[in-house]
Length: 237
Image (cartoon, rainbow, N blue to C red; front, top):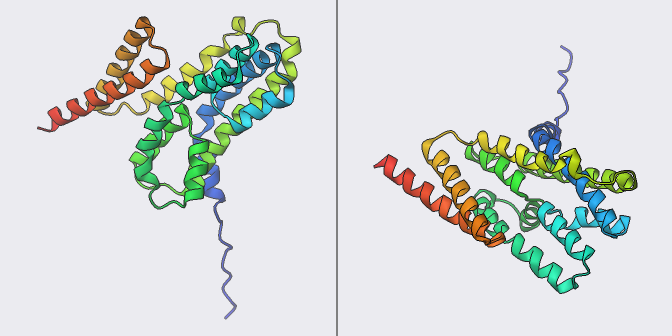
């Protein structure tokens, strides 16, 4: 009898490719918005290399747009740092929500995951983890694909910045909210989740009208989640 050949193990590549496919909706939003950031950063006087490094190291869309705007008006470095810190405080809530799913991860793995966590990848991971434990390779592939799209869009915008007068007529700023709404729609599978989304949206609009700024986003998240938790408890009773 001839020897039986065993196929080589596929390794992590199937999981990596799966993570990349799941991140495609995020890619479609990050590339145009990253492009807009690159154009605005260049027009604000930020050199090309620091502008690109900001997308690689900071990787926070709203914070980067705010930082570029503050730098354009000559704001001191401390003001830029404190403002972007407040804007990104919502990441404390997102990280706390993800923490139970990362208990088996090593500290370097958790640190890398948190570094690449954004609003959009959080929404996607919340849906993924709700289905059960997910592999690290697939999870990190989602994050890496999203950041690659953001950095790529930023670099493209930096390279083309001199050819575009104003990005507002292009409507690129609508790509990110549209993509986020698409991700949100995939999570509205129960009454408590629908109630949470509606409550958070109403609170966000209210606090925006009151001029609360970034603090309004955090407050809306907390109040929306509290309301959704109450609805869930009520429907179970």
